[in-house]
Image (cartoon, rainbow, N blue to C red; front, side, top):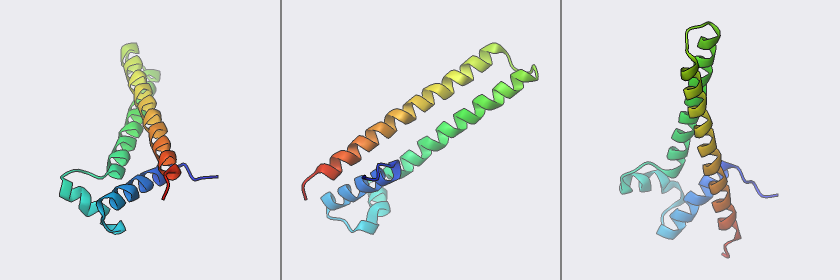
Length: 108
């Protein structure tokens, strides 16, 4: 069975871009610097960190509600934010996996 993890997908994407540009395999970070932006893997890592932070914030507000320090509106807002972030992460993951599978199916 093929490895369909997000990391493998980003590596395949990076390799495909490098091959298309005629770059060396280890030049991915210098390509991103030359273009003027972060690499795809860096953007995914940042999005993952933001998703985890949203979940932690939601849990903290829920704990504050147990002690009586947060209102119901704060809880609903935090949980909704965490839910929307998680749905976005899942959608991006699904797209990355689909892109990886499409790359694997390409003829050499």
